[in-house]
Image (cartoon, rainbow, N blue to C red):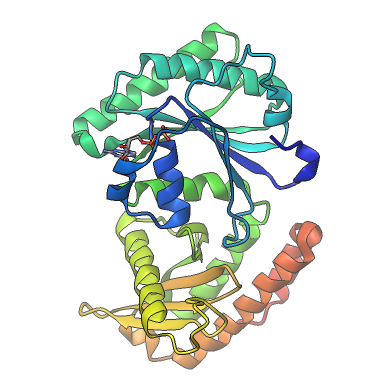
Length: 333
Ligand code: GDP
């Protein structure tokens, strides 16, 4: 186990009982494993650190804990583990009896909060693919209620838990991970602002800024996200990467680079448009066919958008201070 000083990246910890689905989540989201293959995963029995920062915009480590971490074991250094943590994801198997998981959640959260009150606590009510819609709502309500009652009994009302219904068999796990990651991006308001300006000047209906490898969207414009649009954009990324893997001509094996650009016209007058923004990020937009006739305008505005994104991530820390000013001086057509 490394000390926090060896890595100053914010960390996501993935915890939960054995067999709750932690390794599967990590493999499906960050390593393109298909959900069915997870049936053959060996159960986790050690702390597994997966540094995804070389392939992904997401500069976080996923620490997959064995189910039965013993906080009272003197060799378990909770101080060190929780200090550098940005978000703690606790996975609960919703298809199983979750009484033990809830007590484990409580123990984990109260211990982590004492060490680091700034951690975002994220509860994944997982494997909900096996539940009917009514059962999903009921399970969500029940887990929410019991977890918060336990906190209240321990005088920990201040602790905020966020809940997500997830499954690796649909896009819900990507959507939940997107929300978790977005909370850890300090530039989020600036990114949203830029996306709003970009779409309103370009006649675009919806735009997502995607981490290509994980299909996590790190920002979108402020119009509401509907699952169908998000899924459409995820599928577009898969298609583009697959086609470019198979037919890409440079032979370098790089399926995504500066030239990456794709347009797909669907038969209902909707157009999907994908373009490279940075080494890890792509913009994926949904627009109507008639708006796409003004492609020159879109390309020009995209150019401005891309430039702004590069400035934001290059300037780093001070960017959020300067961002408002920069937004207003952007010359979108
Ligand atoms: P871990 O011990 O917490 O790392 O759990 P694993 O990732 O090994 O998963 C345990 C089992 O749960 C595996 O057989 C997975 O295929 C299964 N599993 C994981 N996620 C889901 C899910 O979303 N839905 C269903 N139905 N099964 C899942």
